Image (tube, rainbow, N blue to C red; front, side, top):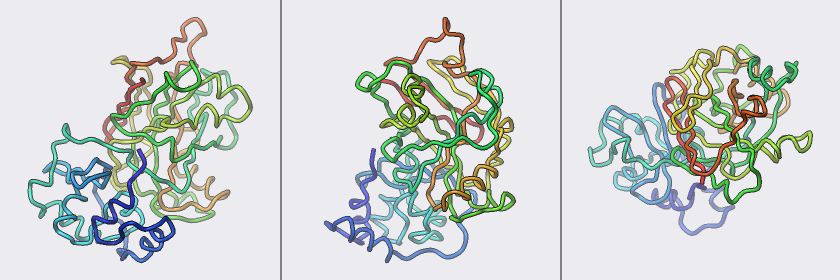
Length: 330
C-alpha cells in the first residue's frame, strides 16, 4: 500500500535511483505553487497506467490519471495527493488538465483501482467517544476533553482493500465509520474560528478495531493501530465543498445498515478538535484526523447479541457528499 515515491518522481524527470535523503532534497527543490489550494476539486490516489500509485482527479469526464498524463505532457503537474496538499507542482496546470487532457487519460470510475487517499502522513490522530449515543452504548462517561489516540502510516488502507484478520491476532473485530479530515495548512494554537480554514479536504474513514486488545490495558493503540486498520477513501473532497457538521454517516456490513447518524451529533465538532490538537502538537499539512464514530458498533450490543466480524465480511462507510468506502476482511 505504500506510495512508490521514487518511481513517481522519476516519471517527472526529477530524480532516479536516489537515497532517502536525496529524495527529500529533491522534494524541497520542486517548484511550489503560490496562493490557496484549488477550489471545487475531488482527489483520489489510484494505480496509474504510468506505474505505481499516483494522483487521480474525479471529473465529469471520468477519473483523470494525472501521473500518466504528466509522463507524456511534462507540464510539471503534481504527481500525488501529498504533492497537491504541499503545493508541489503546477496547480494551475492541474486545474486546466481537467478540461484539456486527451480522453485516453480518463478512466471510468468502475475501472479505477484505488490506493489510500493519502499514503503517508506526518501524524495520524484519532478521536474516541465523540458521539453521545456511542458513549452511552458503551456505558462510558461523556469526556470533558477530546480522547485522542494514534494510528501509523502502516494502518492506512484503501477503497477496495482488504484486512487479513485471519493472519492477525484477535477475534473481536469491530467497525467504526468516521468522517476524516486531511489538513492543508499547519499551525499551533489555532483559534476555533479559524480552524476549518486549515482543512484541505474530507473523506470517508473506518477506525477498524479489535476490542479485546483495545481493552487489555488503559492504552487503546494496540487494538486500534494495526496494519491496514485505517481504510480511507475513495475520494478526498476539497474542504470548500463540505459542511463537516451536517453529513449523514453510515456503516453497512454485508448489505445490512449498522450505523446511521449525522456529524451534527459530535460532542467536539471539527473546529474544536483541530484547535485542541494544535494546542498540544504543531499541525502539519497532510496530518490526518479521524473524528470519531457514532452508535451502532458491535461492542455496543448486549453481550448475547455480539457477533464479531469475520473473514469474508464486507464493510462500507458511506458519508453524504463523500461517496462510499468499501473493504473486505480475509
